[in-house]
Image (cartoon, rainbow, N blue to C red; front, side, top):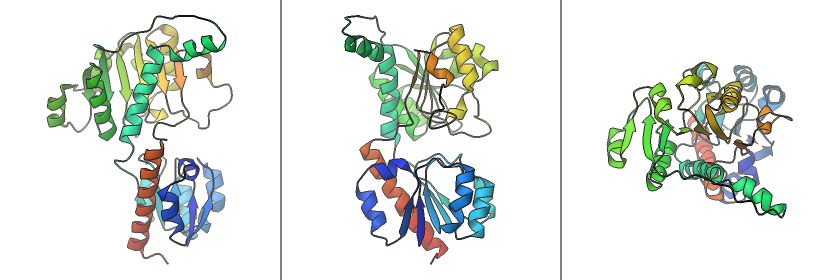
Length: 313
């Protein structure tokens, strides 16, 4: 069997997931994703299955794969927004993902970004490396209100950490877990607009779909609490980049802290680079050794399960 592996996190992190894949006796080709539609169209028909990252598995790509050897897609990670699931279903290509393996890593990253900003860690480090003793005034997060947009497995881990930090916790989710909310003092908002209006800090943890795309946009900036800090470790498409810039320049948004961008790797001279109160990390929220091994192992196990179900030989 020929397997295409595109996840760079999987490739770059040695561990049990490598051994598990190697022990299957597959012929594995490593390409460094995320791969565009054009790149995938040239190669996808040569492989029986793929372990993918955030590659563009459009209808065209899946159709091209089916006309060749492609029989299964195993997603390394959780988000499936880059895979045309409708096309995959119509073309009888099973798709799996890795649910419940990266919530600790991502939740920790949310607070890494938040504390780095409010405690002025980056500018203070830069001053010291220039041999300057500059002591800026930071802020505490204790007592502030955090709004968690999306209280799934990651959102819940963020809530647990927020509670330990003494934050007041609001949440918005299509499927309310009232038992969890009651246990940890979380107040559910009936609408995303209500969450926006009450939150000093917003953590975006929603999946990306037609309902959530650009959930923060130019037309609803006025609904945000003034000087809000927005943290995005989910999907870049949840926000409209031009709206973030408008919000930063108008003072509505105090800071935008993100692990995701519309185009990755980051394009040269991205407009976000001009702003000290926009902090960007290169999609590493779940890129811890522990999380990568868990996700990689599950991605291989999911692949084997799909292969067995499809009786691919």
